[in-house]
Length: 98
Image 1 (cartoon, rainbow, N blue to C red):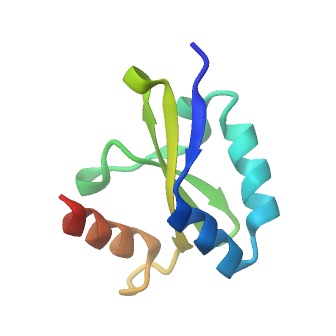
Image 2 (image 1 turned 180 degrees about the horizontal axis):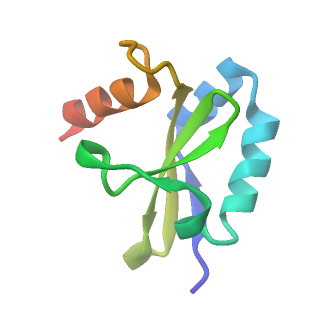
Image 3 (image 1 turned 60 degrees about the vertical axis):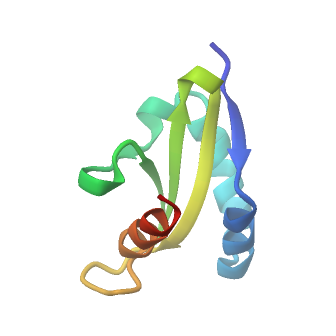
């Protein structure tokens, strides 16, 4: 089954702001070879999302097999213990949209 990548407009803007668009594009292309193995599975409130690691940045995505898509949705800096940590901020975004 061939999955197609979907890049959220917010993610494209975040990648531009962080200046990692080229590195992210290569990581996303590599991940599309097997998105279920490429990134680490997130746990607790962030399941079923996965993440790609690009240095100190994380790209959060989700595989949606029933729609044959991989949705790349969010990017941020990993700052463990900080309110600005990518996972803290993404969890807040999810809570707002649910």
